[in-house]
Amino acid sequence: MSVVVLGKDGQLGKALQSVLPDAIFLGRENCDMAVFDEIYKTISSIDNVTHIINAAAYTNVDNAEIDEYNADIINAKAVGCLSITADQVGAKLIQISTDYVFDGKADTPYGVDAKTNPMSVYGKTKLDGEKNTAQTKKYNIVRTSWLYGDGNNFVKTMFGLGQARDSVSVVDDQFGIPTYTKDLAIYCKHLTETDEPNGIYHFSSRGEPISWARLAESIFVIKSIDCRVDRITTEEFNKMRGGVIAPRPKYSALELDPNLYIRSWPLCLNDYLMTPAFRI
Image (cartoon, rainbow, N blue to C red):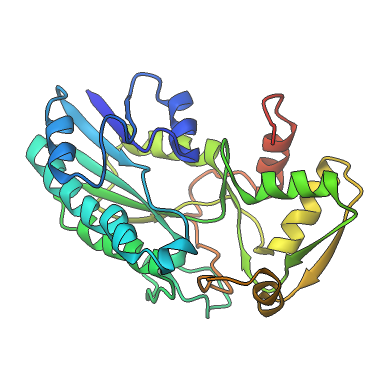
């Protein structure tokens, strides 16, 4: 049995290395997702591949608005190649997707069967990746939200800003639930060990949806940082920042399987921030 993980250098890819030490991890240097022949040749050369976890993605949400070609190549077309490859080697494809496939107009958590309507290029290309995944004989699509772990993310950004400033302005009208890569990686491992039916699955931490401002305040409380959070609207933030900014869903909490044990977001955030390895 061989589990192949694509995107080894991303936040989730790094977390998967801890929970799947015997898996084969591929990065751009040995499997460029933009070169479709390379995807097939690399994976088909590995003996007895049973699962392919695709944690690789074009994740620069704002840049995707002006670089739709490359976002589409990585998030959609390459996944189509992976789907064909998975069938040819007899593997199950586990595709990591996003809450950005929704338009954010809901006021209760999105179920796995909820209508999709992405507003950004990133969301659209990830949804196309889901559709390509669903052409595979054996697959699980895992949507997640507000990911943080070993790498660049909102939590680390706020931690650094909080230490350097007396106050920070943070959006308070976008709501979702953070997800710690450590927990998502464990769930992905679970999917490699069980025969879950084909379909879409949602995974985030548990808890009431929160705003980015509330998340920032929670970071400062846990790390005892004396920094005020000024709550602002998305419109105010966009005016302050300038440049090309992709539209974000105002509400993107995901409905979770009630039978699945999942830790709460405050517990996960505390775990992440208090680990000895945490750093900017």
